[in-house]
Length: 159
Image (tube, rainbow, N blue to C red; front, side, top):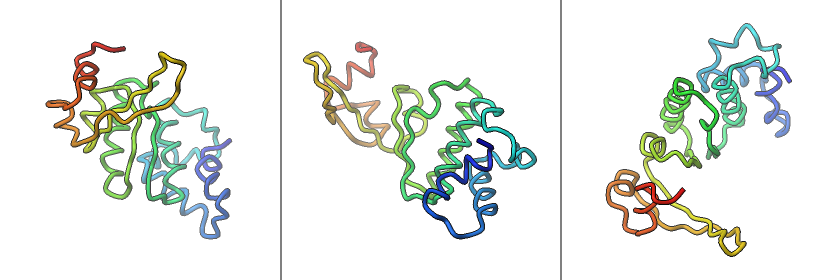
C-alpha cells in the first residue's frame, strides 16, 4: 500500500473522523519521516529504505496517539546509521509516549532504556513460559545486577 495508506491504516481501523491528511502528516513528522516522503505519499511503502520503513511503522503507530508504544526488535535488520536514527527517534518520542522495547541487543538497551527488565524463557523442558528474572534502573542492571543469571548473560556466558 502507499505511504499515506500505510500511516492512515490504524486511523481507518479505529474509525477516525478528523482530518486524515493532517493526522498522517503529523504522524510522519513525529516519526522524523515527513521531509523525506512528503512528495511521495502515493508511492509504495516498499520503495523506502529499511530505516525509512521502520520509521513508517512508527508513524503508523503514533498516528492513533496511543499511550504506550510497543516495539519488538525495532532495529534488528537495520544498518548502524539507520539504527542510530531510530534510537534518536525513540529518545524524542519518549517525551510523549511510554515506550516498551524488546531487544536482544544489550548495547542498545544500555543506550535507550531508563528501566530494564531481564526476562528468560526456559525451553529446556519444552516450556514456553517467560519469567521475569530482574527489573530495575538500566545503569544499575548492567553495572551491578543482583541475579546470577543476569550477570552471566551480560558477561556473554549464554547465547
